[in-house]
Image (tube, rainbow, N blue to C red; front, side, top):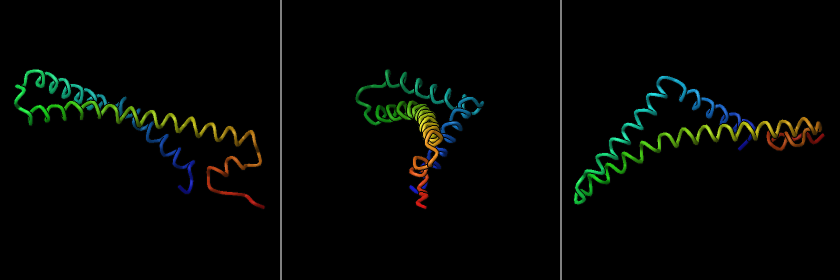
Length: 113
């Protein structure tokens, strides 16, 4: 990757967008809908006849999708927070070491005067 700091900033932004999405009406709706769909599928799964293998698989997939939706959002948020912490650490170290080598390591730029 040409500039790891840009990647960290992009990850941070994506995590922040995911957090904002969860706070929005649409985000709350989607999370609630995924939860309802998962619960509905789980209830139906508990009642389906054991010989209906295809239906069982379909319901298991619905349950997995519903839980995956929330896991994807949580993963984006956690990655964003981790990236922000890493970025802050790199910048702090660069400020402590004014020769810029630490920052240059992460930007892919060297000042070899």
